[in-house]
Image (cartoon, rainbow, N blue to C red; front, side, top):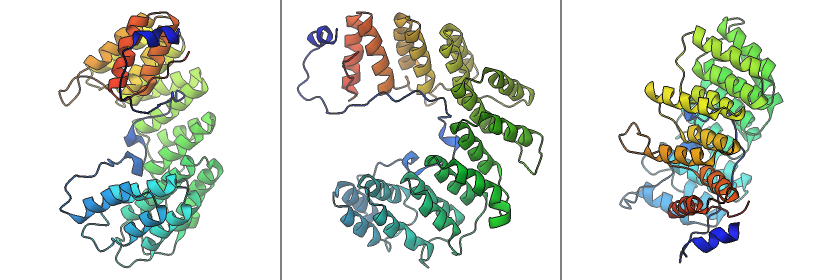
Length: 379
């Protein structure tokens, strides 16, 4: 079948060699506001104005292939004006060194900030260092930085950054022990941020009952727990969806309603995914209309759930209509369309080929190529 489709496609003289693979569906919260921002969530695009030293430095580091030289460029630029506030520069440097598998160089560029008298002494800067170690998969370095006898203030903010590093690396036992020892060992009372990260870690580790217990204590304000917000409930709701805990899923939804919490796009995405998982994608599409009527902007995940759901139900024509609806959706900015990702192109083309609907498969594949997404033509 793939061979037939290839014969229908026009030739492209310079197709980019990009292969974006399908990632497994995850029901975990995708909203960036649900967790501490990681360095990769910051815009990495440098300005093209080369009249100033920081943009030139970013361009130099971006084009440098030698990790030793990357570290040297970064360390030699500490005296540049606004160096410490240039988050994209920090993130770019650590990302390049991480891809080069040089944790030694990452420590060389980050560790000195703990004792450098010129570096900012704000807790936000410490949290940035911890998040950078987390993004590089170095939770031990993050712990050392957190426990370092430096003048940085430590509170729920930096504690949450350390807990996030444990979640990111799958070190759930250390997540729980650090959370439990925060008051006695660090004199920090975990706040809402830290509790939400704990809930996320418990859910990712499949400990839904424990997460439900913590959420219950938060809702009753037991054991000095902070009051939960919609992010707290969404985290457990997504965990229930991933583990197939239908009873708890309904229970959490009822609590959200009873507590008059305002559902957001993650709440709706969980409900939409649940309907799609049980073969009721038409109900999920009705929820899409409800969320749009409430002024909640659907995300790429919203449409992926619906398109994937219709494909699983062998209703590929409805999946194509949802794809078209996605591109016509109004954005808050007033612009049209939600941009499809590689997963959406892949699932659509795959199912259209299986149904021998080659005309639709062709134009969708060509559109993906135009967006520099090379759809694998395999079934």
